[in-house]
Image (cartoon, rainbow, N blue to C red):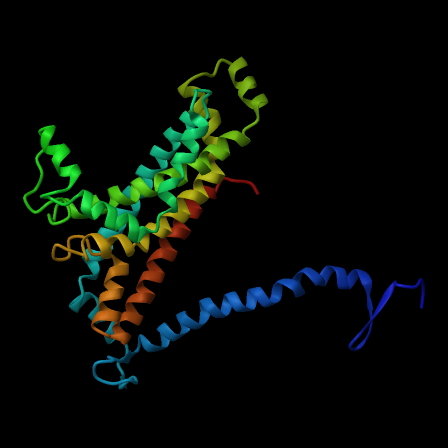
Length: 309
């Protein structure tokens, strides 16, 4: 049979040790992968099936009849889906853009050798440790039109404040939500980008300086391209998180005034957990999944199309 230990006794005979070693990682990962797929695929399958049925828990605990594509049509006819989609894209797109560049500026500042940067890094991470609901309640009081400190400061500086407050005005409600989210998550961008800056070799920087690069030229031609993989995944993750914004919307504006700050996630909450319209909510869920998948795949295509792995 060869040297001792060369073969292992398996359920159906002798297995070569090298074969076992090759399969062992997959065997160990299999339970986690199966559980993860079940947690992802079952809810999506449940939503897909019920998106073709009329099911409202106020009417019946079970689906009543097969409605075909009616739920998908009703999403656009009876819910503010289009406005919620516009608000979500604005919040996710502008929020991610602002947080990335503000985070980049802070990361570059942290990368300097100024005094106090160690303490600044510790203080900087504090907003991200707060739950979004807590941050929402904090700014809800700070933005209170009659007693909030932020409207008081702005009035003192001569900046006009809406009589209803920033959260009660249709033109500023969504912007206010984005402002709070930017305050909380810009430090996350800063810390990750700062780690990326630390990973850039000093030899590369010195070589670029020898070639005459300095200041903005160094940033655009050396630093930013080297940070591109980190930045790309960071932007993608944060965009998806903002696309699913619910906590701050619920706490700060409850989607109002009217539907001025309603997002897709808040729309799902209203239809599913307030109106109990399960079939309509299931159809809306799949529309959101399709929209996000298209956006992310287009983003990955354009960002990584010239990258060699």
